[in-house]
Image (cartoon, rainbow, N blue to C red):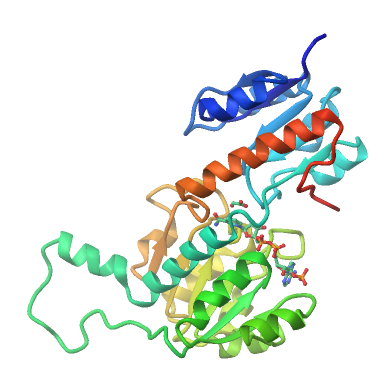
Length: 322
Ligand SMILES: NC(=O)C1=CN([C@@H]2O[C@H](COP(=O)(O)OP(=O)(O)OC[C@H]3O[C@@H](n4cnc5c(N)ncnc54)[C@H](OP(=O)(O)O)[C@@H]3O)[C@@H](O)[C@H]2O)C=CC1
Ligand SMILES: O=CC(=O)O
């Protein structure tokens, strides 16, 4: 009996590949740090029964429509904005993702970004590396207090809640905005639901943790940044597309806001000449929210399991629902 064919868009550790090989034939893009070229992905999808992909693979309507055997797309991520979910649903192709397993790790990084931006840690490191540390000065590299400040979370979901919990350890005053209220979370974390304008106008830290959708595209635009306090710091570890980067650049340059901590950008990877990197008040990271060794292993194992479940005709543990 012929085995189903799984295509993996990135080089994965041997034990993950072997797990799949026990039940499937496996093809793999053999590079770990370079995404599969679009034409290779398109060709592989024409014969694959299952796709193991990542956030950087555009799985669009055209290649889904040519994927005659495809039964399941499993992404090693919680965000699935790179996949045309409607096109997949129209062809009864399942989509699985990795919610929950990465929430705490991503919240750790998001809070690290908040702290680094608030206390100007990258600037401090540069001062030492450039041999610019002079005599003690009263207002040298003074930043923003984190304790007792107001943390405004747009998108109080799994990761948003984990960020909020970290904030409570710093006695922060937590406010949030979602499309719907979460009374349980309000009770458990002591967070208060506010309208978006109030969150923007009163928070010392504004942190976006929504998925990237048509609704959240450029949700943080010129008007939003102008509503923020000019002492406030903006944190984004959701997706770059939730922010109008031109508006963010202007807001930072004009002093409408004090700083930004960014793990994500609209077109990744960015290069060193990206405009936002020219500003000293930007702390930038290369989309490493979930990048702890432990969590990435769990995500890879979960993704392989989803593929096996889908191909066996079982319901994958974490299906994306429309
Ligand atoms: N930087 C990184 O490495 C990582 C980034 N991410 C990103 O984080 C995102 C969130 O993940 P996770 O917390 O698991 O997702 P969840 O679905 O648990 O949370 C998302 C939250 O956003 C809210 N939301 C959705 N749309 C809107 C809107 N238009 N306005 C306001 N709130 C909205 C939802 O509430 P409601 O429906 O009530 O509006 C929900 O509470 C992912 O989609 C991904 O893009 C995830 C992991 C790592
Ligand atoms: O950005 C990462 C994800 O899991 O989504």
